[in-house]
Amino acid sequence: MMAANNGEWKTATVAGGCFWGVEEYYRRLKGIVDTEVGLANDDETVDPNDIDNMIEAVKLTYDPAVISLEHIIDHLFRIVDPTSYDKQGPDQGAHYRTGVFYDNSSDKLLIENTIAEKSVHYKQPIYLQARNLHHFQVADEKHQAYLANNPSAHCHVDFSLIKDDEKK
Image 1 (cartoon, helix red, strand yellow):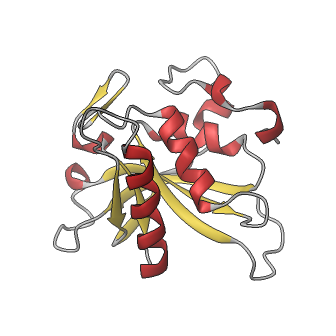
Image 2: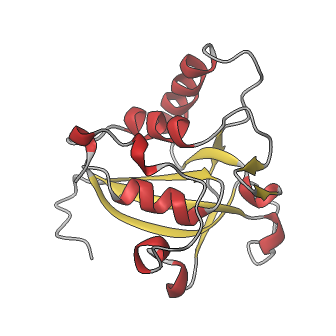
């Protein structure tokens, strides 16, 4: 449950394969106030009820005084293979595309620039993209905080990549 907002929190939506592990990773970071898993749509022509054309994603509510959007993107690069097309860990298919969704132009430019800066460290093409968020459909309650509630479930995300000073 979120505490009072005071108008200072922001949201970012990230996609990094199966949303269970991505959510749990971010949930453990300082500055992340709330997480919500769901299906995101980056194409306004796609019917948001057509889940086959949706991307598993995590909507993050964060305190920008504690964690920046650039740092959120840094963490995404830590936990995914940005050179993998529509696949993360054992999960394959368009549902598992990687990216950062934006809903305003100032975030779009920041996201694109951060991804471009990181891409110079890779020899292969980067498939992690800046995407326009047209729709976010919240997943049902059993998927929220899934790994926190089901710790023996499988996950492709390595939680040990969080440094001690980044943990809640």
